[in-house]
Length: 282
Ligand code: C2E
Ligand code: MG
Ligand code: MG
Ligand code: MG
Image (cartoon, rainbow, N blue to C red; front, side, top):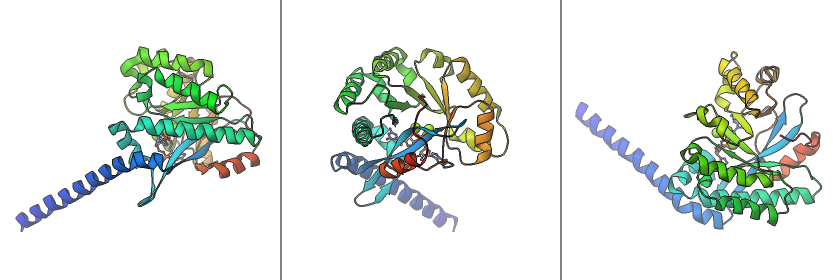
């Protein structure tokens, strides 16, 4: 009996593994086609001031409308695209989409609108990325600083001097760098003061904990940011308690379902029009 159950488990394991591998292979195959076929859409989630609540910018978050399997969440394909290197093409495509959307909004009478786009740290290994960003700014006539970037720490420190040159190369465009998911993974604490970044995003996992009690790590991150003269955005604020705590501790900006989920471009614009216009530069 044990033997047959054992065999069953092996079989089950193989099937699960096979399904997973098949799914990864499908995603890998479909990604390139999906870019050409315009299957990716950017949603926009507001970043707001915690002091005197108003929207200061939007984070662009990708959504994949797959013709066969329907909606695919980013956590299902971004890691695969990272592994295969397809993230480079995907990111460049999404930067184009963000640039085009910004231009559209500006033409519709929203001159102060700003967007951040998530990009892989792989881009910070070649100076070509600076030229690409220059092209986007020129092509869509973007005023300096209106299209900014979010990156995670991992990967950045592997080639610190080149990454630094690239970030500095983006400075004439006013491109600010947001360090995403700060505090998770292997923190590059020793390198933080060397990186010419502008904003720290406190990871949602820390903000989640604030629902029960205060977390000394949040204080530590805020005081670190303060001494490095970095702006802080807290991710994933869902309730007023988290908001009040973060505000009291001097965190300037936030993001989360308490104000809005990521929205399609039209809905994001409606939300912005209901609130006061974006004024505070981050
Ligand atoms: P991220 O950049 O840290 O984005 C924040 C994630 O948290 C988003 O998930 C957002 O929808 C979600 N979120 C925001 N506020 C709340 C909240 O109050 N409660 C909860 N439960 N969730 C909240 P999403 O859109 O599924 O994206 C997941 C991750 O995928 C992103 O994490 C980012 O690392 C990656 N990603 C998304 N879009 C892109 C993209 O265009 N390019 C690249 N390279 N990565 C992307
Ligand atoms: Mg992000
Ligand atoms: Mg994040
Ligand atoms: Mg994240």
